[in-house]
Image (cartoon, rainbow, N blue to C red):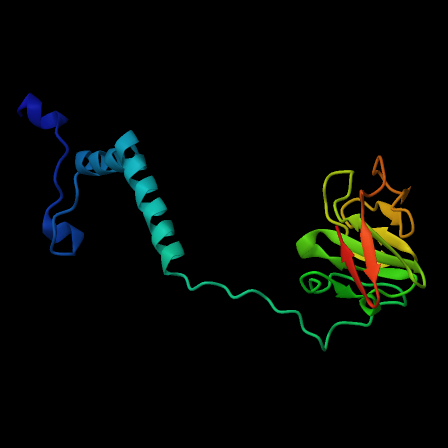
Length: 182
């Protein structure tokens, strides 16, 4: 018996596997596993996975923005509003702002209130706590949804929550049935 042959892995004849193809030797299997789990193999697989992700993202159709359903929206309580449409350039009708409540114009970062009939106030919508925008007016208070700060609709002063100060006031000018904010 040859000493070299005692160390070599025996090859299984094709007939023994039943598939008609020769079985893989242990050294071949180890070489393939090493190629897949070695540094280069792992990098190749990572690149393939990343490339597949990029291709999938590029081939996905864009998602249309969700439109709010008017049929499912409940009427807000008296004096309460949520985000509204932007005022027309230059001015907005005073009738858009309810007495004892207000209206939020998110695109110009302004909330306009009417604490009493004919008295209009305006404030920046940015909460001084962490910069979240206020989103509603309920029970004569402007509400920040992030951490529960509440502000008085007459003065903008903080009445509840973690905000250290009130909302920043803006100048309101009323001319007839329209108002402008500076």
